[in-house]
Image (cartoon, rainbow, N blue to C red; front, side, top):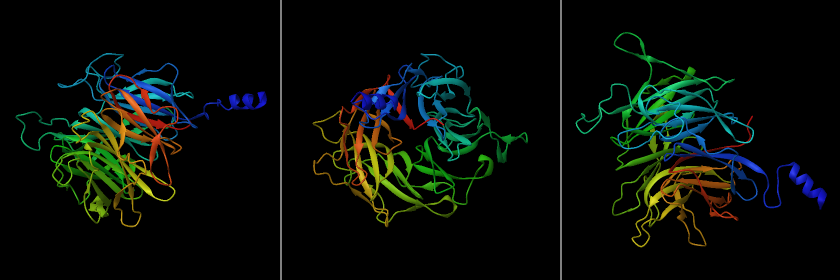
Length: 421
């Protein structure tokens, strides 16, 4: 017995767990901090990383991305805006706390601030890294010289994508100019324009980058070229006919999913809009069209794709409910994806708990590096909710040692990483 315990301790395991399978970082806007957790392999339980919480480096942290190999973490700080944000914590990013903060990741998941980099527009809201880790794309809600506000001309509140190359040895960012468009003075534009009031973007289809524009409910496509360059395809602004777009995500191969939070009589909980990526970064509607969200759900804001042993699954985070008897109820809707047709089908659950209850106000959702667990970051109650994932059925179940974990402040997005290489 003593020998077994000794070996287990040497592998970082205990009698109650199976070692650390990955690390998780959760942003919080109330104190501009980052909560850090170790993910237990055996239980999915979260335990605090040493020295956390960490400063976000700026104000109003809203998005984050981990480099391939897990050496660096990049945090997008939106900065203080007329409606949100404060300057609490250590401010390394700009006068209003806006910018991309780079952190190195230690072997125990500990974050060390390195440097802050400015995006070219204002109010950065999302980050996307290419599969090689060579380029980082940062979405700004307002491009330079954009005209926004109540008196703005329709369509004038345009956003942009700032492109950075990533140094392999240090993780440092270097601005990539736009080679296709020049300024009035003949110099290269330092950003790539997108549509009206963008909120999120996603790479899909093996070389396309799609931006969701909430100002006119459209999708703006770019093709990704050599050197991180973004090129406008022949298919420009894509109309969705959505009522209120809230997110975009991608599945395997060329599948793309939008969430539409606008309710109607046929689906009070909104819709999921499934597409496939076509030639020229076009989006083709999947046979059957939009899919109604599950009963008693409302305000879908995020989706996550997961691959299983026998099927593919899509999970949708809903911030509220249509059930008047449960006004604070937030949930995850779970769907299976037909591999042949791409159609979504509600995952049957013998316990009748699909949709699955989560903490109040979910914002983002991730799958752990071993594909055993699913987690949501919840803004209203500042928590993380965890589930075990059955890869053969897509069903979710509560973690065996409790599924609710306290983050820091008002949680926004979260990210995970496996071992640090």
